[in-house]
Picture: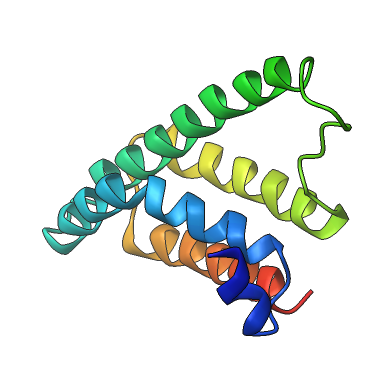
Length: 123
């Protein structure tokens, strides 16, 4: 996969995005089905729950493994992606905590996702 990404002239960070998309695919499909049935709150709960679980399990495992692996631990987030990450946290807090997500709020989340994907491909 790395070779194909490099051959296409894309930055190496796209490999991480592709891996994350594959890992989160089952929950993404379930969230899309819930959104199609106009159940935005369920859709966002599925999406955020799976993302938080993946991040919450992956980073500690990699941190522990970095003790035995050569080289420093790099999370691969530059300043722009950190800003998008915190923006997502703020928007998610305003959307999910009240318990009544709307289609407009889901559109805001999709806009932030589109910005992240664009900036991952075109840094």
